[in-house]
Amino acid sequence: MDFQSWISNIEGLAGVYAFDILPDGSFSEIKLMAVNKQNEGIITRRPGAPKFYPGIPYREYWSDVNFEDYVHRCCTTNQPLYSYVNAHGFWLKGFYMPITEPGTVSALQDKSQPRTVYCLYVLTYSNQVDSDAMSKRSTKASEAVMSITVKLHETQDYYQAMSDAVSEIRKVCGSKLCSLYTVDNSNQKCEFINENGKNVEIINKLAKSIGRSPYETAMCWEKDLASSDSLVLADLELVKERDPAWYHSLVTHEVNSIVLYAVRFNHALVGFIWAANFDISKMMQIKETLEMASFIIAAVVANHQLLSRLEERSTTDGLTQVLNRNAMNERVDKIVSGETRKPAVMGVMFVDLNGLKTVNDDEGHDAGDKLLRKAARLLKIVFSDYEIYRSGGDEFVVFCPGISEEKMEELTSQLRTLSENTADVSFAIGNSYCTGDYDIHLAMKSADERMYRDKKEYYMKHPEKDRRNQRRK
Image 1 (cartoon, one colour):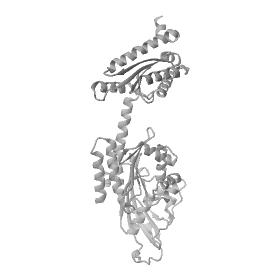
Image 2: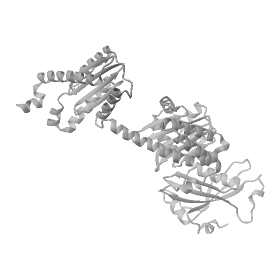
Image 3: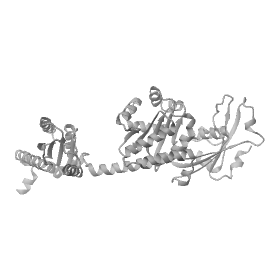
Image 4: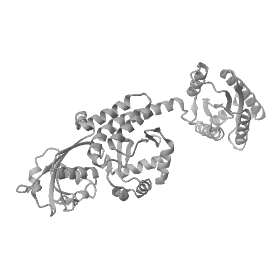
């Protein structure tokens, strides 16, 4: 049959695909038998792409296991199929139709011999999601998506909501294990959420078993998808081919089938839905459900990441990456109001960076910023277990809830020693130690006064660095 003439007037990107069903039930490679002009322009656009001819192997142009699975299912079940996915940087609407050459009835052919089957595939694509296309799902998939959506909005607790949604997804997949693996590209951080909530230990253990960091693991999974939206694999042969390190980890953990579904918001990766040892008989339902569920989950994840970044910016000093004055004031207000329980004991330390104005005046503010960052690093070395705030220009405050008085003095001594052995960093330090029914404001005032006495002694020893004194002269 002249498929080329037959599809030339079809709108959209159209192609006829063929493969042989072998006597043992396996399939030959998929071949592209015909393409309309629109489709030919797309598939041959890639640098190095071969010129089209009828019968060229499909994988000369693309390699998408999900597309291949749809073509196989369309032809073997003799049923039309529909898909709507976020892949290759677009929203793809695909229609699969089994077709037969005139004069043949494939269902009656001798099945002891290879038989060729054909699929017409018509594709349209858009940068924007089509809500009507998204809603066209089977009853089972629609019910599953509704259950997942309800779980996502039953509680304001983000991690609890995600945990509940993961539980629903695991039921859809019929899998032994299921999780949401979120990706925040702005800070290269990932989170692992399963039915028990957020789990830092599991994500680190998972990444370590592959020999990567959590973020590196996510980036490798993105490559493993090969621009597709998902991998829904009944066996691990493709994983073995694309990512041997991940394959070894899966086998070690007795995983024999895998679902890896990309979660994207405005085409940007924000995570993966991950399920292991799933019910293979539910593959199409899983794909259909996750096509829409991943879209809904993506919006929730992206919103959470945006709010987290805004919150971080409102509480974190951009220069030194310690907590800022807003965070300190909020902490004090909550202690005073009783919104948070007042620690039974509290160490308060005021730390001022000596000589910052001299550096700013003589070397410029870039040098002063560099000195502030260095000072913050020294504070983090000593007080990494406690709350460090930049309360103003050259001034830092440290809250040490639950610390012993001996430990407080020990850390104060360590900070002095560290600064004395750092050529360009000098600290003025004052602290106070509180127990019982103390007043946090008075504790801060006491530490501040002691710090200024220490600073005064420093400038008496180094008058050349006191620019305020020089201006008075």
